[in-house]
Amino acid sequence: MGTEVAKVCHTLGMQVLLHDPPRARKEGEENFVTLDTITGTADIISLHTPLSKAGEFATFHLADQAFLSDYKKALVH
Image 1 (cartoon, helix red, strand yellow):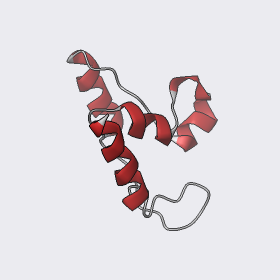
Image 2 (cartoon, one colour):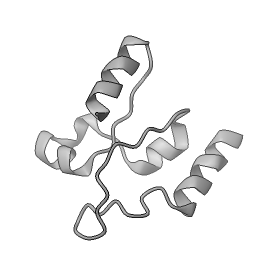
Image 3 (cartoon, helix red, strand yellow):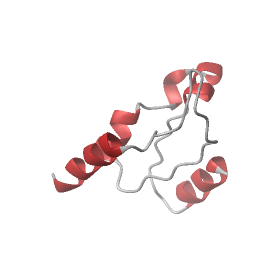
Image 4 (cartoon, helix red, strand yellow):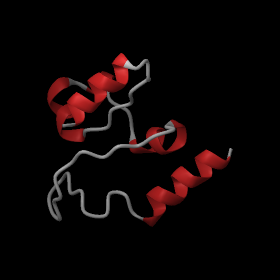
């Protein structure tokens, strides 16, 4: 789903920032950015991830209060 959203966004002329640690590990990190980069620069954030509570790439609470606070601060500046 995220890949399709990215294609549409590119077609509309948007700059798309990708954060996907499993893909970055497999494909190389040059096409991916950190979550801090996204919260600091993105105008729109769209999450497309399975919910997992354990493991190296756990996503439970990915968009937690700290994430939303960082994003809100970036929007104010």
